[in-house]
Image (tube, rainbow over all chains, first blue to last red; front, side, top):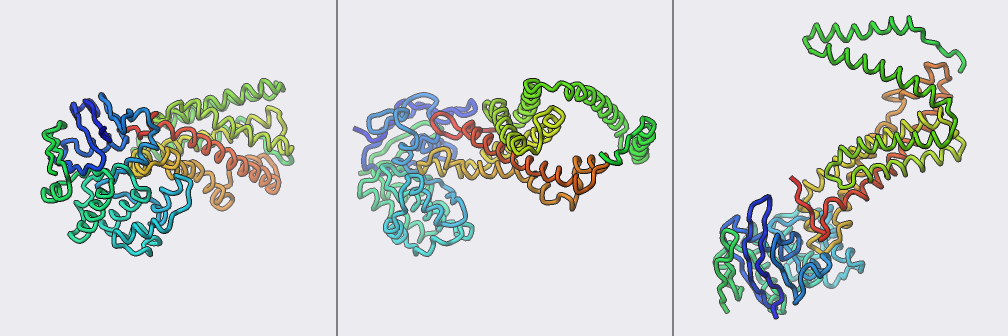
Length: 218
Length: 256
């Protein structure tokens, strides 16, 4: 049984067709790179996966049940989405780290926070830093930590390394790869041809709102 | 009131020469505002004469049911105007009506129970006019702010939603920002009372012959009641209207 399945999904916005007849099955533990030209509908595909938008037509099935049968908040807690441009809210890194705990009404798990900071090669004193003073790479890593505090079943990544330097990219790639090896399903939009094939077991190519190919690598 | 000045019709006619000053400026400086000024002045005179007659009649009609109905009519009109500012808010009229009604009832109840005013038309109507009008302006500002924030802070809201947050924690900063926007003009005006301006009510009382010490008591009461109604109405309206910006799948609705 697939973990996530798109069944003849269409998405229109403002009378414009963005995605057409998308049918694809994503298995537990898959690492799928999503490639395609800008404006082809890749980000819309991820937004549909995270239930930030709903299909105009067609169904999205998660663990055998239609998305509409789940509570939207529960669904989004299982499927984490990291945006291309990370958005850190509030004033400090701490507010961002505490948020996933506060919406679940649990106390911040300091050990989990420290573990993730060290995985991303960051010192825990970042917690008190002002989010406005962080570099793009630091913001992206904090945004990833925020999404990983409660390990999701599916991790959606929208060009998260496009603005990062080589060192930061390497750190992020290693963390994502090890999470996938531990069982997290990853869907990663990337424009980097080398990156798209290095870790993924499948490459999904989207062009003009349609699936062009689904190549199985491993 | 001691020393109350009665303004004669002749005095009023002489004071109307002040309008000529405005008209002369407009003509001299080619502002092309002459027509606007004449219409504005005529409307002010006609509306005030009409409201004068209506109030004479209403104040004589000492029936609490009638006073209440008149209050509801005033609230409905204010809610209708506030809702026009919040076209993005679903059920804007209902939300505005409820918010202003609760704000007005709580404020009036405290004023009446503390015997600051009596539930008589000549006291309730002018006082309510002030608080309802103020609440109407506050709600208009709240709606404008909330719609603009949901449009401009889409990233923040969607980031929070994507982390699994419900729509309230995802919108809380926007709600707070909008409540603040509704309340700030009233707070700012309270801060500068007596320093920047002598407000209308106080000026009116002093002109009518009240002692300044008597007039400030009324003004302090007005300040308190405006703050209370504005905060209650803004709070209720923002907490009821933020849901309009989401669909039933807790997704932020696209706004052009």
